[in-house]
Each structure stands twice: as C-alpha cells, then as structure tokens.
Length: 141
Image (cartoon, rainbow, N blue to C red; front, side, top):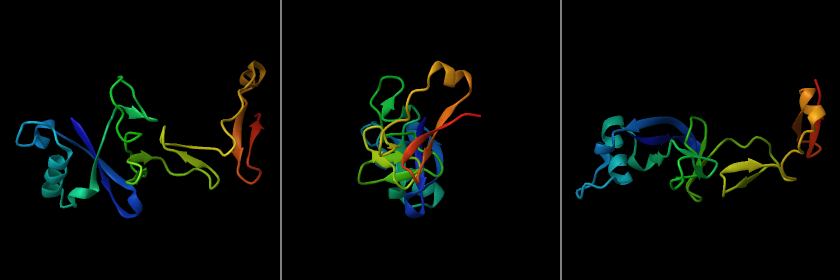
C-alpha cells in the first residue's frame, strides 16, 4: 500500500489516504508518484499536486526497516508539508525552536533537555521547556 497526504491551506496535512500500489503504475509497470497523484485527483476531486506521497516507515528522518527515508516523517493530520525542504514535520511547539531538516523535528535553541539522574527518575521528575527563559526547567511532582 502507498500512502498519500492531502495538503490543504497553509501547507497543512488534512488527511492521509492509502492507495493500492497497482493504482500508481506508469506505462512501464513502475510505481510513479505522479500516477498516484493523478489517480487521487480523479477519485477525490482534489488537485494532483496537493497529494504528496509519504512513507509509513519513516520517522525523524530514518526508515525503520533500513530503507531509504521519505520526506522526514510519515505525514499525519495537522503536520506541515514543507515543499522547499521536501519534508513533513509536526507543528512548531515554541516560537524559539528551530527546525532541523535532517531529522525533520523541532529542537530547542539550547539543545536537548539534560539527562535525568536516577533519583530524578525515581521521583517521576521531568524537564519542561520554559519559553520565556529559554531554558529547561526541572519539574518534580
């Protein structure tokens, strides 16, 4: 099965459909995204260029079965289609965060949260992003 994201206003993914691979074969019998887009346009009354193929096995720029990753992430409703970078990525969580086009994820401007100590893990602590201070704050319940 092939998967295609339906792109709406502001490049947001508004649905994801599956398509039989046989419905996207070109005249040479080879799977072709453009053939799939044309099929979806005919059967769903949505412009062909607004159907973008996505890979169910791609997450954070990695294909989980060792294949070639496709477009950063498997598209989901509400995700963003970035035509310039050929990526699907989630909504930006904070204004200061920066998109990494290698893993198609947003990252804080200061890096990942610090590692928790054994004691913090035992206490169910976690780090939360503080946008106003641009820092990771330790949250202990």
